[in-house]
Length: 161
Image (cartoon, rainbow, N blue to C red; front, side, top):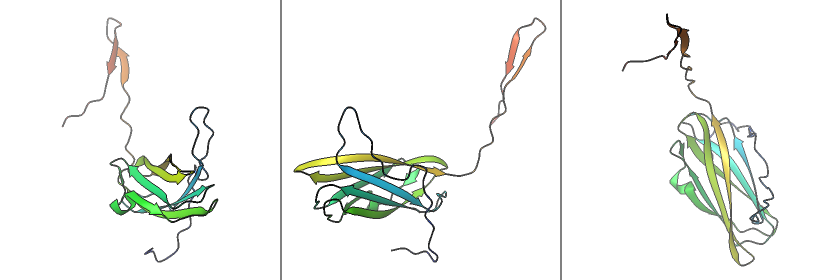
């Protein structure tokens, strides 16, 4: 259930779209994955992400596991879930919510797992979330000079606590 008064316009992540790649080594399971970040990632505010998947086999269900580092809060009820049954080639979607707790680029790890052709197969994808925050002014640069003997002197900035 959504509790917003006005619909939000989806804001596409630079890496939105299908995340499929051919691997020259280990073959990828036949699980397609895409996502879109809805709205602007804001420090301390819940962010919705729409996750989509398609498998070219009928599924009894698709398991989804989410994780992030300590800078990204994933609600316990969304950390592990089972998505509905799907017919072969049918797209399954789920909207999840995470809360950025720090500025910078945060990463949400998504693990999709399903039984395909009698074997459990998994697909792992990482979603980057770029959060604007309080910008930290860069430290002043060192100053370089020479002493009376011509020796190089590098002065670094210091702060006292």
